[in-house]
Image (cartoon, rainbow, N blue to C red; front, side):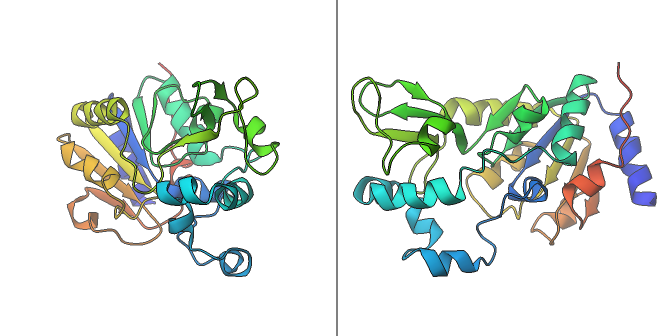
Length: 243
């Protein structure tokens, strides 16, 4: 309880908060962290997730890529949890200036957050590799084996960053700028082991670094406040005064 009081005091005295989150933010909504042990992978797929979700695999084995992608990555009926909602509330109150996320599920926007830097892209934006036409996630989900453009017949690719692909430069610049100007950085639901995304927190020069993660991370010792707990359970205890 004392740590929550300290966290509340940090929030109350900050006016440029940035949130940096990973898969642990969405697990409370029911989206699995595919790095965790999941027997389904061994039962249903002949390749590990990291291989399936690579650029090479997408190009060479597109049908199998989409079989996994539609089954495991397109949880379109999932709703935001307490963490997503509290962050949107903090933004509306003028406290939170940006969300930087490694997730591709779009739940921050669904909860009402407006300034969201999606480092690894989003399942909700898909494009034709031939003509560039944009499609939503439902078009991909409801397509036959491999989604094709309804205008030119070209192959549709999710606008997500696959293994072997680089992050979007504009997204990275926006995230770095937000983190560099923050007075408080909340890092949550991430092991801080996936690079280059995890390296972005080195740009933080503000007053308060708060870490929320179920397991210890390499940055725990540098944080001003550490919670080894679920993200939603911690954030939901905060109160927000609308300004």
